[in-house]
Length: 460
Image (tube, rainbow, N blue to C red; front, side, top):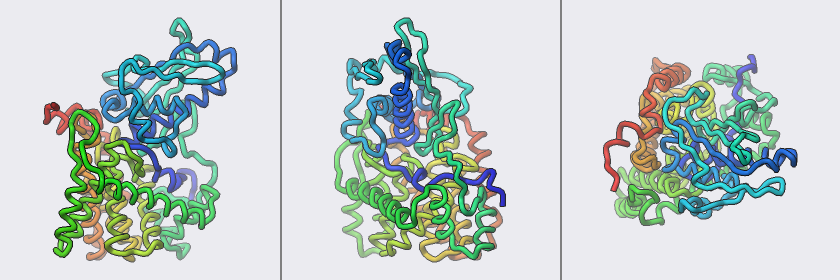
């Protein structure tokens, strides 16, 4: 089987740790700004000394909703040398609070100021390769460009820079190359492999990690997710931003405990866990992209339920995560997980499909059951808009995480109680439909807050 177009993404690129509220608007821009800082540090001294000011140009949804998503402070954090997986979310949230705040960016013995006046929010149509585009420029004293970097935040915290290979590019080959569900299943049949075995072998080949190291990192990802749930069910108060949205997870969790003996209590608990992690994301706390920050409540809710209610073993949890990774890779490779390209279909839809696959595989489902569950998960999110009120990842995003998890659970039930051969639509087919739907969807419904629910509420 050809490896020419094979998926080469690592599980730990798909599941990233970083601050909320948006992988495209927070994690991606911070990484891009940090990368630009490294390029400034590497400038020849004579060229660096010409730099007197920085200009940050934001386009597409980065411009339309970047302020609400915290893009400005994420970029400044990156320019200060901070990285998503190690930054202090409290310090990050304290950046760019006042118009007069000025920060000194240091490189090659230079100290160049950056402030709110350094950021230009460009409106209108663009012709860039991706809607989430940012151009960083170091300018001289007369405003001429010394060096610039053009970056694209392509979803899930992944970035690309013009003129460079996409982030995560590796010239290592997976042990079992595939780019479609059909090819993946062929490997499993021909090699007499389980899905988790194939995923582990590919991860070893792509990253150079041992199986023991991969297992440890999966456990760490799950731990980060569950910590977000635990923080969220305890935290009370108002979420940041002008909407002044009250946290609901603690109240829902307490009510779930009061009704723990009822038959549907597990679903109330699931809702509280999803809201808890999603509210932590909205507050700018540390979450895991799964596959994005906007959808970072679906997985913690499901995995928390699996661990503490269904008492799945650590190995079953890991196997489920590996199955979810296979589905996330296929969507990212053949469509997109970016809300700016696919609407919320690309974020919650993908998370729901991944969650359905995880539940199904952990429960002993075959690859055919996994495919059916993931297909059902995507199918019933087709056309879902991304229209956050005020540009904040709050309404409808937080509740949408709980709904995505509930759909994932139902997709798992449907897949496990029918003959997978009865499914008329393949997973590969539904991804093609997803990609076409995203292309056809108006940009007003793709993370720009220009239509839909974003216009239904007048903020106080």
